[in-house]
Image (cartoon, rainbow, N blue to C red):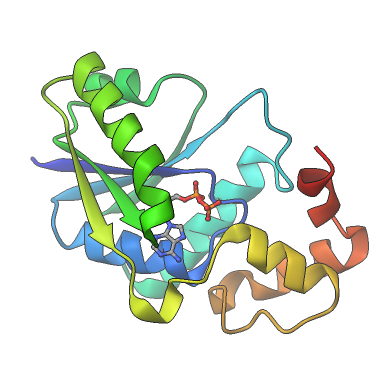
Length: 171
Ligand code: ADP
């Protein structure tokens, strides 16, 4: 069975993420969407909330070969443990590339049997990031064109009430 991993922080999930997830799912028997926990970062949504939102968004899309998992540690170790064939990453702009290139080369050293595959962003979502969603929602803007329907109420409610985007910006 060919297994792919789509890693990220998904804080929160956007339609840009879902585009990469659905296209990635079509390439593998099984795709694991992996919420990576970085103890040095203070996310807006807890790992559990991020997983639950991803599960709802994946169910909304009707993807049956996609699972969600959470991991605190090296992606290369997780990939080796589950016998993954590839890591799938989305590229929005040339600016994403330098960092992703470095990560892909590092993971290749740590886990040579796992390839990194880059999928180009869908042009409709190339501007979209979790930070943009948080920024717009925290000022009461309409994020319905940015996030999956199933998670819109939860994200809107939380970000409007807490203005939580500030956490990241003030770091
Ligand atoms: P971000 O916080 O920048 O949205 P994540 O770490 O949650 O990033 O992203 C996980 C993966 O999804 C990364 O490979 C990232 O490049 C990709 N991604 C995020 N947004 C988009 C988008 N709009 N189009 C394509 N890929 C995207």
